[in-house]
Length: 127
Image (cartoon, rainbow, N blue to C red; front, side, top):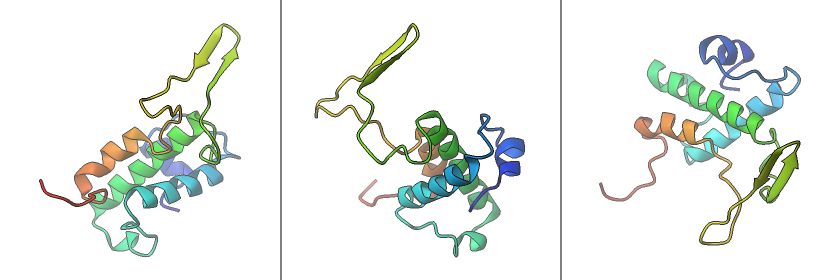
């Protein structure tokens, strides 16, 4: 794992997460950040990264933990997106994009923004 609960709560200052859910969220968030970086990030290579790069990775994992927790937990990418629902006076109805999909990205937008300047998410092509 790239972070622990102490880092998440005391350094990143993340939203409260149920302690029982934290290990699963942390493991899944790490997997998703590895995927987001096209597997340039590995547990074996992480200790060899510069301190600044390690901090960016840790913060991206924390942002991903927060995002997963807010959007259904560690297993939130196992099925189709939520089309809609009602809770009390609150009602949600998914809007479809041009492709007809109502699914939202499994990747935290904040984690992506944290990683952009690191080069770990570079997909190639010309600038």
